[in-house]
Length: 98
Image (spheres, rainbow, N blue to C red):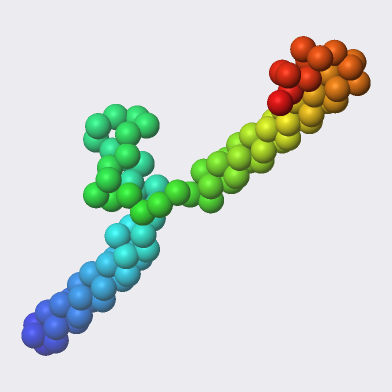
C-alpha cells in the first residue's frame, strides 16, 4: 500500500513538473520577462529578451506615421515656397531655386 502511494505521488510530481515547464515563461516566450531586469526600471535583460510587445510595436508604427505626415507637410511647404519664388520673376530668387 505504501509503495502505491509513493508511486502515485511520484507520478503527480512528474505531471506537475511537466505542466509547469509547458506553461512557464521560458517555453511560452513571455515578452514581458525581458523587461524585468535586475539592472533597474527601463533596462532590458538581453538574455531573456523575446521581442517587442504588440503595444510597443503599435507605438512605433504610430510614431512612424506621424513622422511621414510631418515630412509630407515639409515637402509641400518647400514646393509652395519655390512656386512663390518662380511667380515673383525675381532673377536672384530663381538662382536660389536651382
